Image (cartoon, rainbow, N blue to C red):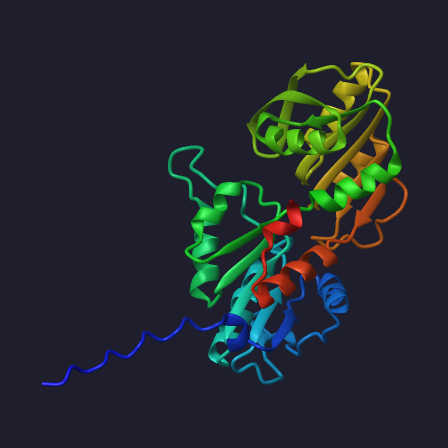
Length: 328
């Protein structure tokens, strides 16, 4: 019998050809950042009003065709955390049911990140639960910035692009031309971040020995490193109530620091944070707009935009290019 030819295996599809068009949508959490991303990319913002029913339930309507499109939903899960998280989940579910080709959750600030492990008996690992919800709601990929705990990437069963605001902060600090600079890690957990930052600035590293007896409360014990006569830059991923930040600033000021600056990716700024920072020894508080910070840029505060960073990540993801090349 004649030998039949085996058909060649089909080539793997090119994702860029499958998703030749992309759309950017936004929830209510940070529309200004979403608009800045769209301006960077030269793309219009997708029409998807997010409203409320009379009883407070969230209602989403996708007002344009998204069938086969590469869709990005920009939504930090900042305060009010649960409202913004539900908006994100419902928007992605609406896009999935509208036959979007691929859905990417762009989460500049990932809430519930501090509950990344069991720190006591009978407590939840909330960040894992949130990761499951995002995946089940229809996300094919997540783009986020400066996770509080890097291992949260492993909680997702979908790809995660973990971006860093460091290049934006570094560029601003270099332009200030600060002399005798030391980079201060406010706790042992932030040493890796602070060491990498100090290396790029050619600065020394200082570590704070801190204890946290209960959530949102910290005690500073020791300073590991030399701050006397130096310009200190306190570096962290977020500032929440600013209790730790201002205590660290007071401690290094008492140890002889000449000038004190602080830089954080996420300005959560809960409760008395603004007042504490204004009354502290911190000369300038540098933040990004991953969380909306209204009428704050000025005085002690400087807000830098991460729209170019997120816009470039979206562009590279859509075109199938390397994102890690942004941080080489």
